[in-house]
Length: 231
Image 1 (cartoon, rainbow, N blue to C red):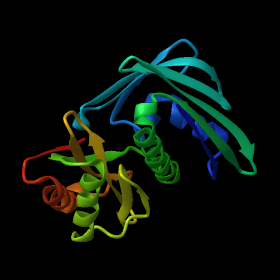
Image 2 (image 1 turned 120 degrees about the vertical axis):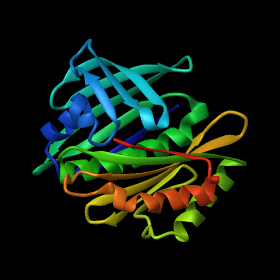
Image 3 (image 1 turned 90 degrees about the vertical axis):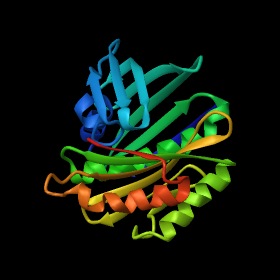
Image 4 (image 1 turned 45 degrees about the vertical axis):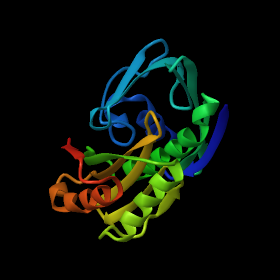
């Protein structure tokens, strides 16, 4: 199963390419921790410890700053991303082609939509990203679990989201320096991980002052049994 994203970006191709191929830049929008090299034949190792996520990407082909092909294997299925960048005025046209499991198509597509939104924030604001994560679990259908997140956000101090990718994710801005995301991840036996994250690229922002916002949302949507991390 595959899909294609096309976007016009204000950042030049060289900045976009680095955001996808350099481990420190990938931490600015895609992962919490990263290492490795973005050259043909090398590997990039990305992880999100707060959500129990880890992946090793093979760099199949790299032609900076216009072409990058990455691949990995998830649950026995080969998954790949092909990135093509074309200069467009002072910015660039981004074309992302994803191939992967049909069973995870909707969640994967919505996940990439959210990540590309975070890429925009990173390219606009730059700098080191810091993240607070609060997570809990719930049961029921994917739709019902996501609606609980949506309703909890509505009852909270978090402003209206700027983007909604039902039934998997939404994101918005608490203020000019702080972004929030709310996500649903499928688990086994009809259960779901609900995660709220706060993130900033401004070293002067104290994320702890906003932690109660995502804690309240996840507590209402998933119940009081939660985990919370900051990095």
